[in-house]
Length: 195
Image (cartoon, rainbow, N blue to C red; front, top):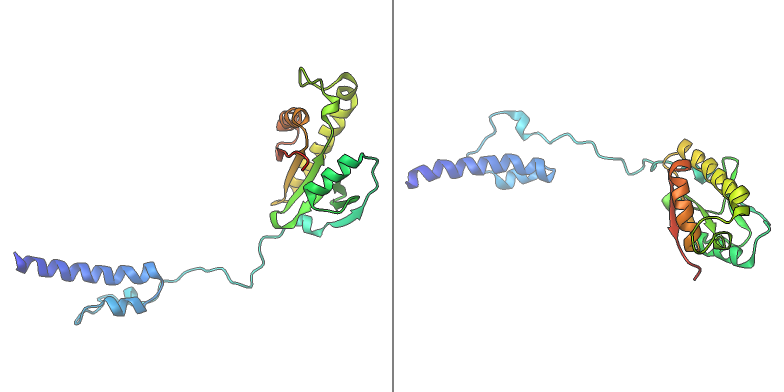
């Protein structure tokens, strides 16, 4: 029985000696695992495995919104809205990101993410039904959905850009999350209260 085990052990050793260089990425391992008297029957088995490795000097995938720039905008907004926008985006008050002909409240280059911050919109919703009040439904909702749709189009045309809308209050967050599903499907929404 011991006589039968010897060829099996030798065969296993040879198999491991061939497999480990490919798995570990080098031929030096083959020399360590080789048994004395072992020789490769096919020279191609002893050659290094060809691999495609990314070059360290290759640029990462470009983020088109990086080509935008900071702009100063003095929109008519409440102090709370201005503070919320600065908190969410990390930009100084009255500063926005201009890209592809549009202004965005913020931009995070590390995420290739354009941002919008919406505060104090729950005042335009019925607290019992969660639906927009009449005057806001007539004009305000359409303006926000149009803004979202236009921004969504910019993101579609500039991959891998992303678009994230932050809402300070729950009613407006819920309503516009649903509204954007069809009108601006790439927008991710998040409820983030003012800190």
